[in-house]
Image (cartoon, rainbow, N blue to C red; front, side):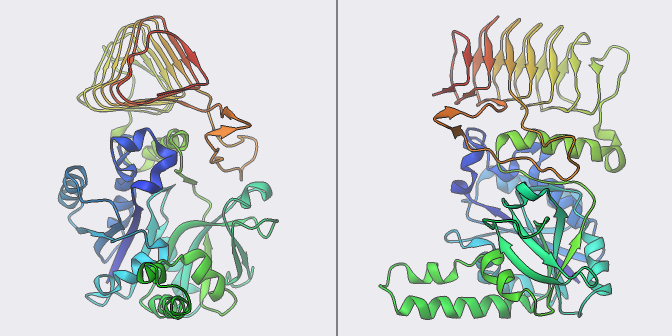
Length: 422
């Protein structure tokens, strides 16, 4: 019997995703037409003998999350539960706090997946790898190859090339360590809790030597990467399975468009029915495009590549959309143009208006390049990136918005470039 745990974080963890995370918890943001979390759940549900999926985070239970869990259980015919942390406990502290729930029913192993990654999720391959490599009680990290410069932004893994054992692990090193990086997807068995428990007891002892300030929370706040993997490396317990399939982080709103492209491309093999095609009386489709059945699109519009159209969207005559996510209820009026942008819920773009951003894609000439999680500002200026319209934003006719972020509920009356519009 197997289980899966998905770490969904909490409100203060989605700051780089604003203003989109103001309206919906980041894990429920639609990527390639479905909530980000659904890609994880679907991959877990396909694993043979998977009995339960647990979500761990510190979001307050809300209507959207409850509805999503109910619908996912109905669709995938598997138990899915949300376990709320009392505070942010880190990637190791959350699973340790709920260890009794995880080991209930005596699973032989369980997966742990971070919610903010986009991947082909080679979970069955990780299971096969664990059986072929190392001891039955060994743990597996999913790894991939990055270029030397970008590897510094991730957890870096030095492996034994013959056995794939992790010999050394460093989280975000200051100098080059390895081009194999941690993908934030793990395969554990219940023995992992002994290792986390050792760190918890040490933290408790350290707390006794300090001033008692919220000590219990600080003792339970444990990071798998820095506190567990670093110490476990080189002991014959930790192995890395390197994937050649796609993987990316989803830290910023810009990375959501890139993740959408990766998932839309995967749909050719996993969900061809989700991809739009050119039909008589329908819009012109170029490349991979997802259109929700409730969207109303003029046949003279041109969509794609890499476009995702949400529920109830209206798209007028002559509209051009490329490399963008259009969220539910948006209205794109005649002849407007949307490129490299996310158009928020119930927003309106007027006739002949232009909304355009700068793509933040990895270097296409480097097969190991990853997307950069750019900071919002560089040298006191807004970093050029995709344009984001929050919910209920209104762009009037013939206005141009370039490389800007527009917070929710704004009615603009002129053009903007490289601005955050509050």
